[in-house]
Image (tube, rainbow, N blue to C red; front, side):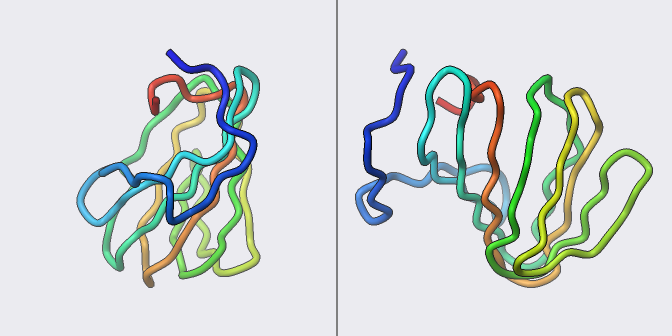
Length: 112
């Protein structure tokens, strides 16, 4: 398995992966300690609640999302962000077509 991305990520040259109904993701930069992933959502798409052992920080590039992290729920829009500690249950619902920029530490080997 490749353990490091190329130096540059050119959007039009990078494949998209199906990540569920109305959701697709594009793996950007990564190495063993860090990964950045662009996730595109259609209105109404649901990021099913889940957990993972990675730390996650996410930036809302566009759209509107209802986030649930643990017992907390909050609507977020462009310019907002959130942090998910390891093993914390989290998920989202897309309220308006949008893009999230997820970062993970360590990298998500399950995405490759």
